[in-house]
Length: 233
Image (tube, rainbow, N blue to C red; front, side, top):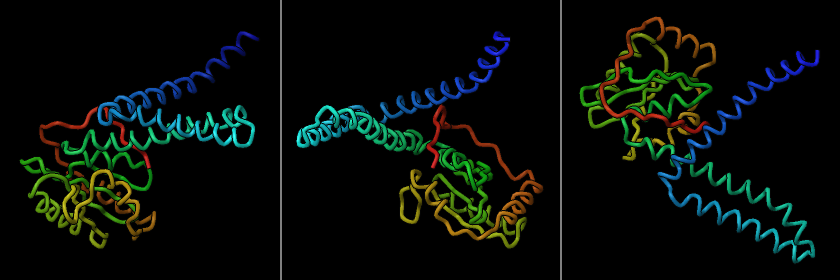
């Protein structure tokens, strides 16, 4: 009986071990990307750790309890350094894919809740492309590429007005120019958009687009982001 009990415990612990391994793999991947894009991150993390800990010890000395405050501020120092690392990793992840073909789709598909994205629903020979996202704000057409992306957006808007008449359609161009949305702010921009549809209406729009079918186009040859997990917000 004891043997079977141990087997059950081992089986129950297996998923937890897999999750832990996956989490460490994600942290390792984020560390590699951050070190490549922002080489001084470790230096800043060490400075933050030492600074917070030193501040705690100095406070402890003034209150005649340096050891006690040192123990308390050690985990706080680690937490502060790790918080800085997550912010740096966030920024490095965007920097590593910015300018690459399909970067906008990677960011959109990283939004787990409230939005459903179909990448590259319209693509030109110059590798300009439009991605379609559906959520409470309605149908959002996100274009990335050169000067020809505006024509693709207009073409896709006409399709949406024909197949899903009455649904609100918003156009966004990813970029750093005037009137464009920077890649690193794309997720936040979508989440701040005014909600115009109910959950039932969102499901209806998704159902109509799925029923239409044949609206997604293959992505042309070119560099695509690989091995990059976008931050979740």
